[in-house]
Amino acid sequence: MLAAAPPALPHTGDDTTLLIAVLLSIAAIVLLITKLKLHPFLALTLGSGLLAAVAGAPFDKLTSSFATGFGATVSGVGLLIGLGAMLGKLLADSGGANIIADTVLARSGRRALPWAMALIAAVLGLPLFFEVGVVLLVPIVLLVARRGNVPLLRIGIPALAGLSVLHGLVPPHPGPLVAVDALKADLGITLALGLLIAVPALVVAGPLFARVAERWVGPLEVPAPQAPAEAERPEHTPRFGAVLATILLPVALMLGKALVDVVVDDPKATAQRIFDFIGSPLVALLAATLLGMVTLGRAAGFDKARISATVAGSLAPIAGIVFIVGAGGGFKQTLIDVGVGEAVSQWAGRWHVSALLLGWLIAVLIRLATGSATVATITAAGIVAPLAAGMSSTHAALLVLAIGAGSLFFSHVNDAGFWLVKEYFGMTVGQTVKSWSVMETVISVVAIALIMPLSLIV
Image (tube, rainbow, N blue to C red):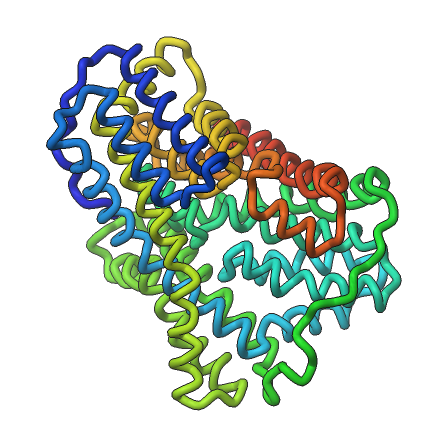
């Protein structure tokens, strides 16, 4: 959880000044990232300083909130991102990802292939970051399209949708984790509701939209698969059941904690204390990572040195992600301390704007401007955090999901994922917009369309 925040930075209390400060800081971050190609960590750091300065913070206090927010966010989320990366690396290097894909595809007919690819992507998307999932899945998609003589987008869109839905809506991915932390939401409830929203969003944006995208884009030549050669796969591979159990262990533990909290509802009860411990995100992911060393690493024939090297190799690529997430936390804390969150809360109350819709809209705007789903999630969570103060745990979780849904809206040319998909599938910019960009928008709109009525029921 977040550490105690420092005393609020002095500000004028003038909503107009605060609004100008927010707009200038966000505009600066957008321009630094998109025009000057500055790393998001540096852009968020500079944007936080500008926000505090324009809001009237004393010169010697410009960085205090940022430093506090950075440290609190990294301590709360950095460990989980690291453990998730370790599990994902073990899954990739052991051949576990290929085992999942091969097993599901072997039992699927031609008509069921889009649904099979969506299922594979959803399962692999639980422990893997989006970019890693794309690198693992796209070669499989290309291979299946060639062997089965299936239109590329008919199975490619479901695979991408499966990865994207999980990335935006379901912990332990960085965006949802930071939003859970910022809004003080319950992780188990967020995970359960995230999966509930993710399934229909995946169905609509995946297999169903794939046929529409196929007509819009037209036939695509299937690029030669750039998959790891069979010879590069480990000589031994883990069993399908062991791989699936390892991936789903942290999900089961966190969902179990949420269920026991609801059923038992007694913090002193032994059962609830046990599940509160084993279902905490840190323990759940640590248990899955340690189990993966055996069920994935040892099963693939890795010795102790190879397992250690695999785990160590997973950390370097995520350093940038951790710093971006930490800087986002610093920016969020600065927003809170200069009084932006309180002003937004009062404004929303006066105009009777739903907190869920407001969170979604703010995330959409920042996503369109910066291209980063993670930056959009972190910033939007910081702005609407005060609105979650009086919410029930269920509605706080839905606010996390609304922000996550907004962060996926219309990926375009300022998003690295846009170019990754374009190059892998050999599409033009226009074809990528008609397929990938619209698919992301469908996920975002379907998700918020489900979240809003769900908030009236639960």
